[in-house]
Structures are given as structure tokens and as C-alpha cells.
Image (tube, rainbow, N blue to C red):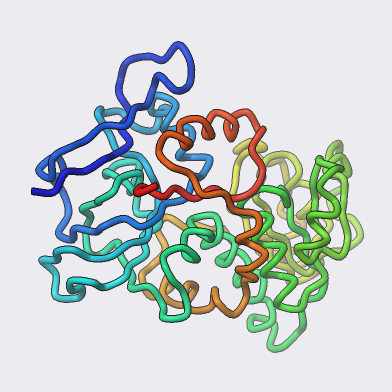
Length: 335
């Protein structure tokens, strides 16, 4: 019999952050759904995870629940012939950790259609140093790069990244720089300028420059944009994007509404490319994860990553919600 030490979110309203989640030992039969049983090696801590750990975050409705929107690990049992015992796998998205039990556990049981095999150039630790944030950043980077294919070889040069010190933004800066682009990083944190330049940013821009009114069209500056923030700043970003430029949008921390016109799209052919990292096809996932080892400096990423136990996770996620945590955090269920 396998006993499972898992993070659980209970429905009792918390009086402080940590009271909404506990560490509990569970029996194997607690996991009802799925056809592949995985021994979890690592998961990563994302903002959505922190919301869910805080009493469900208006995302999870039924309790008890096991959060964790991504994980890496080893197959223990599989009812699907695509996977066999000892296969190394990666899971991100598909509403795991939201609608289905997730990766903050020593074991997870999931649908085989949610999994990909870990590329030989990666391992469980590297894949979760990237996690959902890194996967999303890579999707954004390849969306920007698509301009070169769509416009038959026209090169991308200047790329804007908003929310550049965040999980997605910081990896996007690293990846886009590796692709050979001049990366312009937007942040409101002046003390992180050296950090962003070390990741590969050529220029640092204060986010206040994207506040206020915008003309219908401004001087075209950006060949591509990775926007992790959303909201009002997108109005000015669209107006400053060059003809044929691609704006890859993947976040809404700045709001879900944008005030714009059709002018950037019909006069300059600007393209808004929505990034749905949770619902990406398996074929797309396999491509992105195979490209990761070519574009990510894992030694640098490791220096920015902290490994957490379950108890340390309980101490850390409130800091993430308050904007007080910096860098990557991965969860080791066996620590």
C-alpha cells in the first residue's frame, strides 16, 4: 500500500494564510481519477498555486484538494501503453492542480493524455526549474519568433518584455536574448536592473512609461512583445508595435480589460497572439520542451531557484501573494 504525503487545501476559512492548508498523509485510494500513477520528484510554485493554497483562491470549489499545477516525476503504474514503469515525465496545465489533484504530493494519479516524456537533455529538476512559468515564456518567445516565418525572413530585432522580473518575464528575457534579440525589459523594481541585465536585457524601461493616454498610433519601436501583465499598458504597446509585429499576451495581473482601436491591426498589421499554456497540444509541448535545453542557461536559473519542503512551501506562498518573494521556487515532496 502506498501512503501519500500531500498538500491539502481545506474549506475552513483561514484566519492567517497557513491555516488554509495542511500537510497530511493519505492512502493511495484517495486518488480516484487518472490512469497513470507517478512518483513526483518536483513541482514548482506559481502564483496560481499560491492563490489556491490560500483557501482555494476562488478557483477550487471542492475540498479536500491537492494543489500544484505542474510536476515532474517517474511512472510507477500505467494503464496506457504510451507510458511504462520508470518513464520520466513532465506535466503542466490541463487544469491539473485546479480541477484535478495536482503535484504538491509525493504521488499523483493523472490522465495519460496530460503527460509528455521528459526529453533526454533534461531531467526532473531542470524541467521544474522552468515549470509552467518557463513553458509559458518559451511559448511566448516562439510566438515572437514566428514573425520571421510569417514575413518570409524579416528579422526580429527589438523585443519588449513586460513584468520582466516575474517568473514568466525573467525566463522570457533569458530565452529571447539567447535567440539573438535585443531585449527591452519593463519593470517597476529599480533595484533589479542589474539582475535583468545579467539575464540578457539590453535596456531597462520603467513601467511608468506605459501609463497614461496613448495616441492611436505612435512611433513603431517593437518588432515583438511578450506581455505578462495585460491591462492598460497594452494600449500603448499596440500603438508602439512595428508593422507586422507580434504581441504575445500571457498574463492579466494588470487587469483583464484593454482600451484600444483597430488601427494598429489594420494599418500596421500588428498581431495579438494569445498564449494558452494550459491547453497547448501535446505536439506543441513536445516541441517546446525539446527546445528548452538549447535556450535556457540552467546554471544561471539554478542560482535563482530555491528548493522547498512542504512546510517551507506553507511559509513561502504568502510572500508570493504579497509580492515579497523573488526568484523561482520548486517543491521537493521528499525533502
